[in-house]
Length: 171
Image (cartoon, rainbow, N blue to C red; front, side, top):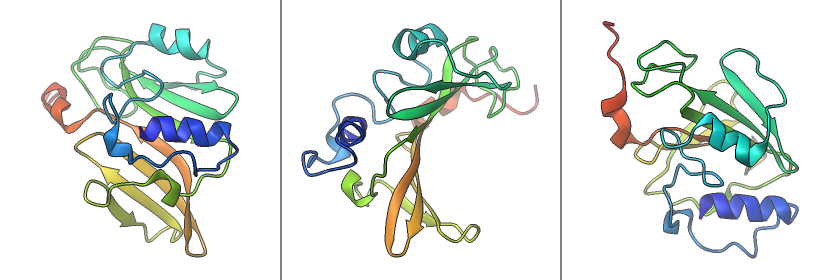
């Protein structure tokens, strides 16, 4: 639902009145974006949805859509060093995605469940606030403007259940 709300709000110019359900009522995994899920989706799945990347600066690909920029990190192979972490998954499997909306969206309009999302206020920069849901693999990055937090980008990562796929550091 969080993803649906984000997509709906992006298509409506950031208005959230038509998206009242909590993001935790989603039917798919919470770390899903437009059908793409870390550790389930492949580079081919991403390219079927988003087309060829606009840029490939090293360890990730950048895709541009009408409403957002999407940065996707892929595995370089089982337990191979990548730009994020080493995971025991095949080459070209999605490890993480960052979705940066091109329109202004307030964090309040996302209706985050405060029991599931830990709010972390950064000391530098002081107007940076993150909402972490480690269990589901979702991080909401926001920027404070006065007393209002606005979405900077959403990060979709592997859920906590996938930790068994993390490679040990002694390899």
